[in-house]
Length: 103
Image 1 (cartoon, rainbow, N blue to C red):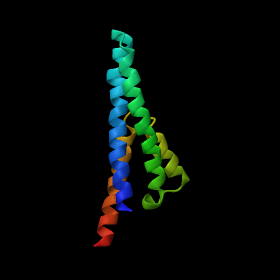
Image 2: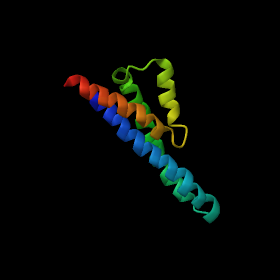
Image 3: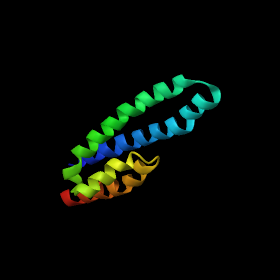
Image 4: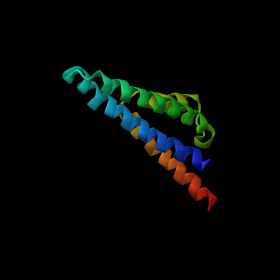
């Protein structure tokens, strides 16, 4: 169970970073410097990470003991630029709870 939360935390962090790179670096390169390839490459990478994040959320439902609203919040976190970083707090807390309960 802890592994599923750890995987979600890692994928969430990487997906969040890729989203920020897409918004803050690739988009300005495309529109201010006429480099559309930056968005094409970064967007593709972010898209793959986005799908991995969605799968990781679904895999972590049981470990996190989420209800449907919590699942929607976790899925929606990936749509907000720093959402996955904010969600990470509750993921880390649950991960610590599981670690302590095994002792």
